[in-house]
Length: 458
Image (cartoon, rainbow, N blue to C red; front, side, top):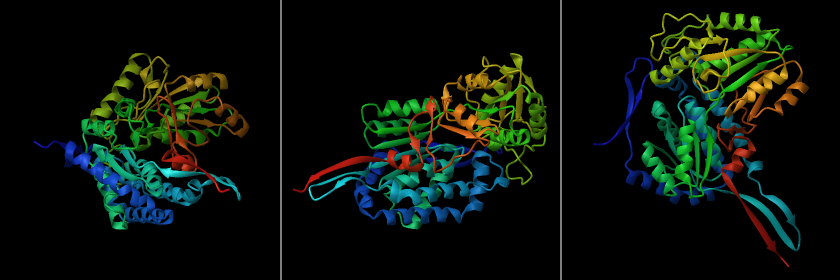
């Protein structure tokens, strides 16, 4: 019997989409087609590849109403927020704009005697394993530059967002990208691992859990294929004594709660200078109490269900354990909280780093807030973490923010903002968040290899 992967809608627990998985033989055939198509794709002029990718992006832009509604059904984001096309287009467009310079040869010497240069060559076949929480934007981070650079791409999207991969493929084909150059496939874990171990791919980009990242690296061991990962996060925010309090509350709490807290770089811990702590908590609690939890198809809903009741159960367990250990919960249970996917957003105080809610990734609408006496204490607490994706500092002193940023063990440090991806900067992490980097010129470099030319003319 053929195995199927089911997208269970968090709205009501019904199966919203179901697709059969490819057999190992069919998956190998798809990878072989990508391998065979890659040289001809790479031989096309860079400008032509860029134009085709941007045409595919434009095709997605014609479907924003469908995108918004389907995302609500698949992973629970309220329709009021309008989908993901803004960030999707911004990232692809930025990479298109820098493609010429990022992929240009580096000329060391061009004289009557020698031509010495370094060029960038595509890696070959790139596997993109994309997550469900921002399914269009996270996928395009690698798909766009990989295709522009001359690679072929095989996309395995998350089961929770099965339809996204299909729509990306439809857009690519409508734009004129050959069907073997970009393929959307439905694979189980064993088949994915077998393909990686069998050297079907030259680079694997994975966004997901730490356990998933380890599985990717184990599968790739000995193949010498590159593996780029963005895994867990427990991103902190620090509010200094000189911060704009209202701006800090509004932005940090949104960074903690937007998308039901299911953001790779969402804020999961907040440290506030003791002089502002009580006021910060009061304002934060008042803000969260204004949220409307409900069906994401309702235009009035501001916070929808988590993508799965299973994910909500894990967050509830963290909250309950923290309360049992002495933390204070400030948000009374919302009437719409069903004990399953619909989860009351929560603010906790009285938390410590002995609690999982301050150490392990929550990936849900909960944030712990602690007072700190100075920068040194804040730095120590922010760095006391196994993850390292982003950190945010709220202050009026840019020089101090830069000084503190140099001491923070994170891939990106923000000042007076959070929960944002700048495509001009490398998206990267450290520690258990993973390795590698996407977007920016570095993203192109990670999807290509250097090739040196040393040509003696005379």
